[in-house]
Amino acid sequence: MKALIPTAAVLAVLAAVPLVVHSNVTLNFLVVALMIALAGQGWNILGGYGGQYSFGHAAFFGTGAYVTAILQVRYGINAWIGFAAGIAAGAALGAVLGALTFRSGLRGSYFALVTLAFAEVLRIIASVAPVTGAGVGTLIRLDLGIRNLQFQSRAAFYWIILALVGVSLVTAQLIERSRFGIWLIAVRENEDAAKALGVNVNGVKLAAMVISAAITAAAGCFYAQYFLFVDSGIAYGTWISIQALLTPIIGGVGTVFGPLLGALVVKSLGEAAKLLTGDAPGLDLIIYGAVLVLVIWFTPRGLIGGLTQARKVLMRRSGRAAPSAGEARDG
Amino acid sequence: MAEPLLAVERVTCRFGGLLAVDAASLTASEGHITALIGPNGAGKTTLFSIISGFIKASGGAVRYAGEDITGEPPHRLARRGIARTFQIVQPFVGLSVRENILVGAHLHHRTRSAALAVADQIGHDVGLGEYLSRSADTLTVAGRKRLELARALATRPKVLLLDEVLAGLNPSEVRDIVPVIRDLCRRGITILMIEHVMQAVMSLAEHVFVLAEGRMIAQGSPAQVVADPVVVEAYLGRGAAAKLGTSYGR
Image (cartoon, rainbow over all chains, first blue to last red):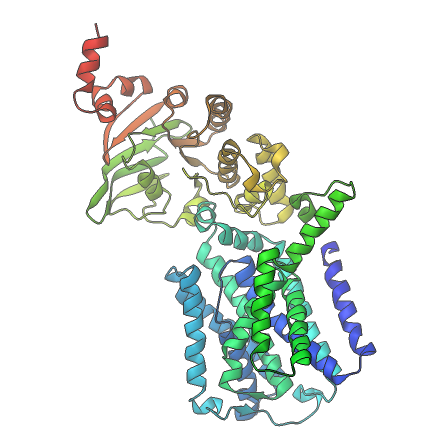
């Protein structure tokens, strides 16, 4: 329980933001950043802890978004149920994709390419299939009210996405301290050694994929409710696959707070660039690239890794003995 | 002698046109140390990989405690009590020594606290007590060999397959680790070891199998096999035994 205190503190601070900040622009920015952080945390479970780098998390994001939207628009199902169904559909898709890829022993770049291709296939299908609204997309009718999971105030959406991020943070933390977590990390470090120690490598990877897919799908469900519109380019576009893997890599891959920190930093830089250059197209991508290069150059373990390193150096300079990595983690 | 705990029966392994293991049989009896020796490229590690489920045999059977375990995946064999170490050590370099051992300890201990207690105990047993909090990649070769051993032990094995745990160690390090292995045997763990360090084989093993070019060419007590002309020829070439015989024999 003591280990959850930092998480609770971060969430409490973030939860207080709408009480102070009333600007819709700022809140909108934070909502989107938190949504990306959620998608990134999903990626982080599989990629960060499990070492399976997916380039196609859009598959889960998009499925969450489409299921939430289509169930409401075409079948008149309640938005909350649609939201839950979207998460479940994402998890199911994760199970299918995981079973297909891990069973056939795909690792590393092969796994990355197959996930990328999978998301692209879904995007193409969604852009022509009638049920998704094909090229037109699916528009959820504006009908404010808590029953429909639609709110006038940005603060309400902000708290909802913050709650989801909170759940994802606690999930990551529980995984980190569990048997499943150490097995997942062992798989990342060395599959053969893990097998020899009794780890069911494929089973562990599959479970991680399902959890990962469910979390990223939740971000997609939220997208649908927040923007009330989904089309194939948004739902299954490479933009979200890239965001989902960039935020943890920049923030700190395989760390609890990496995706959240990464999302806030990357989104802030993107906004700053827009202000400076007046919305030149593609500039945010150039910024992502530049930041990624800098982060990997200076702190290969992301901003969190860099901060930990800096703290150690500072403590050593100030004369106190720095705790070793193992002790710090057990404490 | 009672039924052996582990029995390899006429196991064959073919990689394309190469016959790596050719109808090799061996047994390891419970509570004893059995050694598998042979020249480089004889197929010893391949045979180990078949026993531990990493490679599928093209023919033959592996029996463990009376059951046919041929072709079972490694993680299930580990659960049954068959553990192995790797010739080329495979530490989880991103983890501490304690966490490395913890991975194995979790096989039979669900909770973190129980598994950590086991990991610490085993770390002390193999002489890694003071390194538990260090990152695994800071260990020396000897330290990594010990870690390899500790991780395998943490899975509570009944049979331990040791693939050249002594290779690459200097004589004093070998002297340090030999008692550790003997102690494991005394605690009831059946050991099957691949080893090139003959000094250790002679002092540890009760029974030795000799593999050459995929075929089991000899077996017996350590003293018997080293005196066997077939074994000498497998290592030194045809006619070597006779030459040695003429120069040293009389």
